[in-house]
Picture 1 (cartoon, one colour):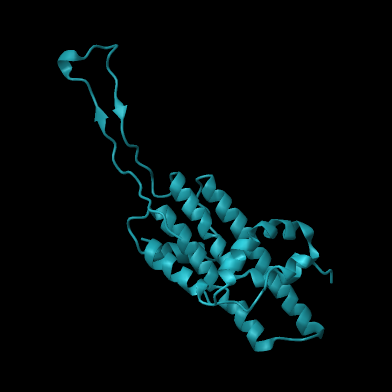
Picture 2 (cartoon, rainbow, N blue to C red):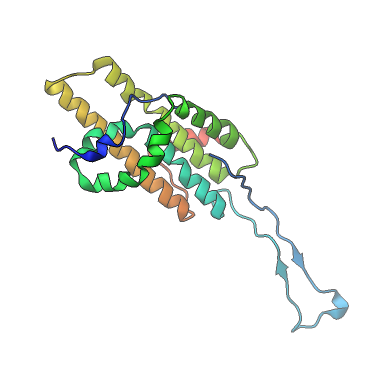
Length: 211
């Protein structure tokens, strides 16, 4: 197994059970100002649209940024599952390297993950002042993070040291990490483009939680 100075800069501790906020709303009205009839001529007729309404699954720039940032939460919380992939594949290491300072801050206090969970769920998801677009994407990130409980329980329950058991655990960890990385890239990039990402496994659960 290749060694890397990258791992020495980040401590991959045991996973914290994780179970950030600008204010954003959609404009739902359109106001049209028309010249009074006595002053109106065919060539003078014009209208001024002050606000344009957006659908439930579209977003303005602030909503896109907030939603894109939410997908870093489960990735940071599950970064320890990448300890094998990161040391063996330089492209993955190059992707993760710029995020090391933020990962260090996130992992610096054991309860950070739980505090972020509470903030996202009660301040964002349950706050009707945020658009459904933001609340749905935030809920997807939360559900994805909650699913990390299962590989964590497997590691704590078996924790093989060598042999076939260790190989299987390495494969499981690497699969979990790559899934989190794909969800981060797909979720964040889709949000930045104003599209609505629907992650496998978690999208339906997020739909049921967001009215």
